[in-house]
Amino acid sequence: MDAGGRWRLHPQVSVRPEPFGALLYHFGTRKLSFLKNRTILTVVESLDEHPDVGSALTAAGVQAGSEGPYLHALGVLAESNMLVEKDIR
Amino acid sequence: MTATVPRLVDQFERGLDAPICLTWELTYACNLACVHCLSSSGKRDPRELSTRQCMDIIDELERMQVFYVNIGGGEPTVRSDFWELVDYATAHHVGVKFSTNGVRITPEVAARLAASDYVDVQISLDGATAEINDAVRGAGSFDMATRALQNLADAGFADAKISVVVTRHNVDQLDDFKSLADRYGATLRITRLRPSGRGADVWDDLHPTAAQQRQLYDWLVAHGENVLTGDSFFHLSGLGEPGALAGLNLCGAGRVVCLIDPVGDVYACPFAIHDKFLAGNMLSDGGFDAVWKTSALFTELRSPQSAGACSGCRHYDACRGGCMAAKFFTGLPMDGPDPECVDGYGLSALAGDREVPRPRVDHSRAVPLTLARPPKKP
Picture (cartoon, rainbow over the protein chains, first blue to last red):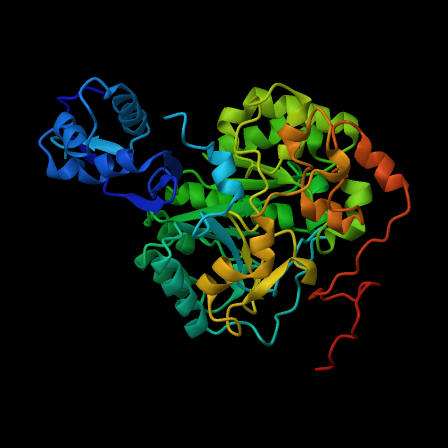
């Protein structure tokens, strides 16, 4: 996952906040995923409001130099089709 | 992601604000009479929830963001409002996966199902051949199930599930089940035989032997990626390396799953229809949300559990003592080994003094020896 990438939640994905983070369920693939803290939840939910992944991370309070684990987590979500590229319809 | 966050499995043991998914038996009525039926189904219960009551439950599940329900029975499709309820659930963002023996999956119904993204179908089959299947599920049931699978495939329904309960008689057919699933473009789902409902009557004869458990485990490790299990074999996870068996390997009862029965009773899990595991009733205890969040039973299940007789066992971290329903319905203590414990402690426990609990809820059509009340005259 590249900080300059433009991604958003797949329209068939439902997000349910939980004390530990959140549960994600994809109604198309019928797969369940987990967000393991509230910061990544904020990032995922705000992807649509930001021009790219990097600005969503900054807005959620992720410090410069600490993006690595978040980009990795977003990459895993993209691989399982939970996230889709904004420019692809 | 960070070291300060407890493992997910620990989070799940403490329970969630709402189940991830739940099983909802819509009716106790069934056209079949499988010998191992975990809900002892057959006759419709006269107190069965009305269409309106079912819709109210769906509204509540939508508010709680329960992602999907596993609808079963009985045979759920024999309810005259079944398709209406499926449509209502999916329109309210509650996905539906329903289990059926295939009786109502005509070409017309299959075409309708193929048109929805939010409905998943699971066809029950307990033998890869008619001979093995029909011995458990009844004459003609293999043909009924495979006809339904054919109708779904012909209609272009992608990725139906074939749901198999592993028994002593079909454990050698796992590869055949996989081929059968491939033939219909379906996914194989295999689950554990529980001594629940009428399953208690046949468990001694049908549950896989210790050697077969090993065979099953090895097969699951080799094929785990492409086979669903409902995480039902976590009691076997001590047979190999941690993590070799796909899934959460956790008893989710009352923590991340539960069961709603046809009259609105809420139980800890689908394999536990007994007063011992009854958390409350949707109608008399203030709705599902209240039962899920405040019932004494669920609160207890979410508190730290004692390892009891299993404390000190090298496998306890892997199996956590196994399945409480399997223990309860074979008359074993809840804080001891699973009857199918991989170290054989279950076998010695089964050989000792034990009293098997009598079923409290039975809708069987035939009159089994354990039926407490005589069937009503028409």
